[in-house]
Amino acid sequence: MSKILARYLLGLSTLLPALGMAAGVSIVPEPQHLQLEQGSYRLDARTRVDAPKDARSREIAAFLREAIRAQTGIAVREGAAAHGIVLKLDPAVQGDEAYRLAVTPERVTISASTGKGLFWGVQTLRQLLPLGKAARVEIPAVHIEDVPAYAWRGVMLDVSRHFYPVSFVEKQLDLLSYYKINTFHWHLTDDQGWRIEIKRYPKLTSVGAWRTESDGTRYGGFYTQTQIREVVNYARQRNITVIPEIEMPGHSVAAIAAYPELSCDKKQVAVTTAWGVHKNIDCVGDEGTFTFIENVLDEVLPLFPSQYVHIGGDEVPKDRWHDCASCQALMHKQGLKDEEGLQSYFIKRIQHWLEGKGKTLVGWDEILEGGADTQAVIEAWRGADEQAKALANGNRVVVAGPFYIDHALDSLTVKDVFHTDIANDSGASDAKTDAAVFAAHRPQLLGAEAPLWSERANPYNAESKLYPRVLAFADNLWRGNAHDDAAWADFQQRLQAQYPRLDAWQVAYGPEDRAVVQ
Ligand code: TNX
Image (cartoon, rainbow, N blue to C red; front, side, top):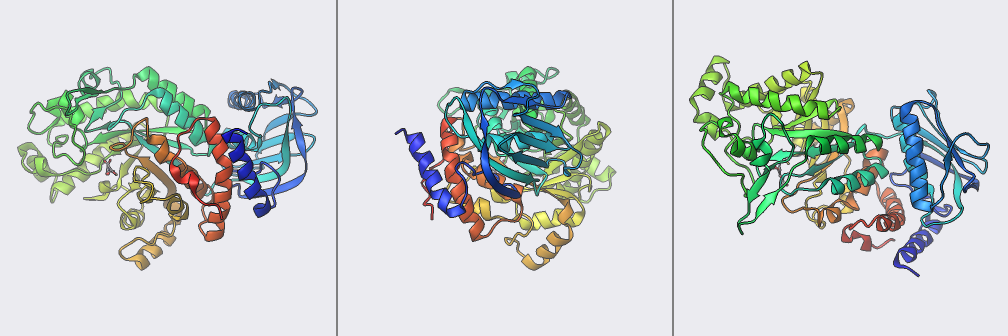
């Protein structure tokens, strides 16, 4: 018996008695309502997939047909059939990402009011398909009504500290989408490398994308605009929005290495190989800095249809602004109290420019320093106090702090990720006050992101950090309120049943697959 098959059977044998479920019904993230019915639907070469005529529905139907072929070997064709799979746009299924999936012995029906819902219904159906090639397969009869608790379910990848090829990124998009993650935050620039082609500033990639390591080797890489478009489209097909992050005014050494005039002292520097926080930042006192950033963003925006644009804003040491005459002059002219005021001025200026282009700014929680405009979305990474501060200020919030999957597997366990309740954080310095703020501002909480920073991650070990924690993260955010021990026990069972699927895709997941199933 193959290792894959053995593990699959093991997964099922532990699953069945515990949940009283039919073979193969084990879904991550767990649907909000799942009812097992009698019998099963037989999928074979006679099966047809019927979809509405609009472009997105047809694209989703084609995706489903290809997924069935890849997983079972069965080639199902397009078209209506008495005994078929039907995708239906139905306004009665309420919720932007909501869907209904009904599998009966006669047919399979996926209904949703949007293409997003239809697509998630397809992803759930894929999890109901058994693994392995066969001329026909049985899909257990079920009735599922499903909708996510949080609208923003993201994973961030830092491609600056280490570079990841397009093939790696696309494989992750396949996996993230399979678990209904809908946001891919692409951290494209940082001190150690600029990774996106900007035609007007060719040195950003000819210089800024490369660094000389301590052993003398040249390390780097970047994505061309054509590649970026390809990835964004690949993600779109899979229900994932790509949010670009262009870091400013800090974490910009690679940009400064390419164009030293961006810095306050205008000195030539090299792309750094040192991790951490660097004092050499974009110069706020120089108008040329804003011209540069706007020109860069003018090329970035058309590549990303996303409503949101992330501008970083984290870890901005103010030393250089303190020592810079034009920065100090600007500070006095604007009537700003200190350098934090300058940071707030900088961020607000970029924000208003982005708003003029119809976009919404996202920044790390440091953009609250010196005062943030309430229209900005705050990504809270430093803890519950910052999360509370952002909520109380009136901003919408995405929580990242508890989900740093670059951290070691024993310091952030699968269980930690599963148990964290972003709407009721207990890690605050003044937990009581924060709890009240959290409760009062619940609608401003958009969701969360799991960031994979890459100082210690690279294409060879990243999957061991991402999986299986991303599955716990996806389950957490989709369900929203299942954090107790019974939910954890149930998740562990469902997780076991996912390993054969991850094996089939050759995912090099982390060692937590050895977790004991109680
Ligand atoms: C802090 S989180 C950073 C990153 C690092 C990370 C390492 C954040 C907004 N900034 O630049 O990669 O710590 O864990």
